[in-house]
Length: 312
Image (tube, rainbow, N blue to C red; front, side, top):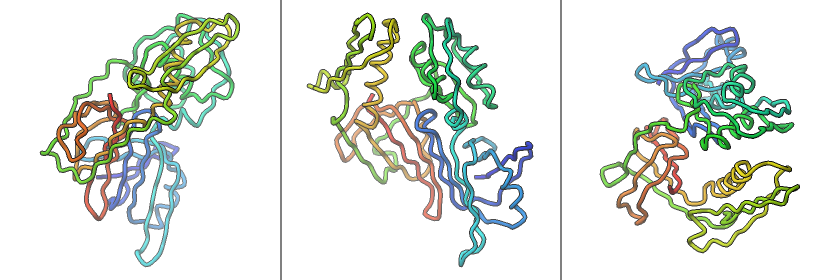
């Protein structure tokens, strides 16, 4: 694995050989993150002061691309050592606040122009979505929220960042499914099914017209879930926006509710958003799971891949 930093003036410098690295990939939320360790030389000090981006490459392919958040140099009994940590490219949208605005008929191209492209993010594919009602970006919202709410409400999907740092805004992403069975070198597995706090029924009410939309959790409600929540939306929000509010609140409550975490020795070809089919195993839990996070790591103990999944 080779590491490179890019400075604020566009210069690229290759780091010394990485002797430890960790890449966490979600593609969306929470933000991707990375940490690397390598040897340090005092001549690197000025380069690091101007470093803004980090890229990792393996076999000439980009393994991670992100924003430098912090670096530390240490000198102790182990010698001179450098550690760099940061987040994926979504950090640029999370860290920047959007101005309050109301779009009467917003299109994806307009959202990209105002909320994404000014931050140096490249978008390689997008669905040409268009809002069928006024779309509001509230004061205090991040640029990420402005984009995410638009694609979720009018496209039914979330923005996704690829390993090379480019943004994909399309519902039909093609990701090959993988299988975990007795042939995969699994070293640890953990399963959790949590009901506490998971919404089974969301009732969304228009403050002005008092119209209501009932959205139910298709996974928990049929299993006897009894957690009802009331949500109020601004006047004349419309049925689609009301349903989106209910679906969004249910999805947020379901985060990490029914999860499987599997650690595999070496590399394992799973990607966030993809599907993993679990067959057999010591816990007796089988079926299809959606990948929410992939953590690839290498240190003095070797290379591992940890895959966190939610039940489909």
